[in-house]
Image (cartoon, rainbow, N blue to C red):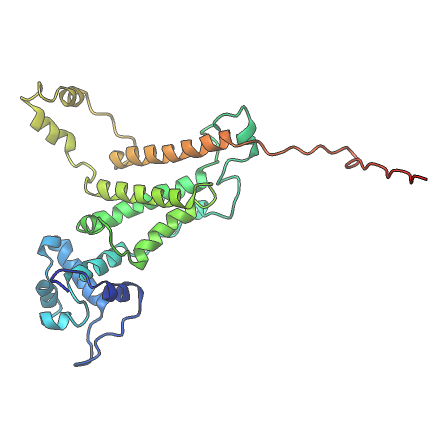
Length: 291
């Protein structure tokens, strides 16, 4: 195996198995989880560029070679660190936990047949899944902001750990009663993870507009649309909304999913009607026997 290449078998064992630990040598004094926590401390302070096996070993007061008894390399260490940093996802908000298929999760017959239109936005049709995904995304943004290096570590094709997969589980479970396909539910999870990761890199009050304005100043002819937009007075921040950029993007994503669900509900055929008489269905009398 080349230097820097991931030991996939060992990584799977570290993330998903029950590692047996060092088989030879002195009695182990550490664990892969302890090494991951030490790596997180180094990366939180100096980023992934400052993360080396030597730095982590020094922080644990062991030799670099001793560290390799627990984690085979830096790539495997970063994977362990990411799963440890994400941690278990928070439970679904109590008021929004799904209690099986019901009117709070999917449009009902009245929504599908009344005027064949889109249900009123004031209904509670989407309250369950929407409230859960809103909370989920904001919690994930918090985790990424707590560990900025994790934003880069979470990019690309790789083996997710059990904590990371538990976050995806929450999204899929929240959408279970909406009628979205399995692929679509996973696509929603991917979309929200990307939004959370991107927004975590742009904290509130980042000064984005001021930075853009400084760059555009004197170059208005090259960037006329930006110059005109930045000349407008900033929109007032809504009370109780410390992160309007996150609010705006997340609301638009959830609106899009909601619109899709409403459109599908409106296009669905109405349920078949069954005619019954007051005293029950009419039974045809038996034909008299023929001679």
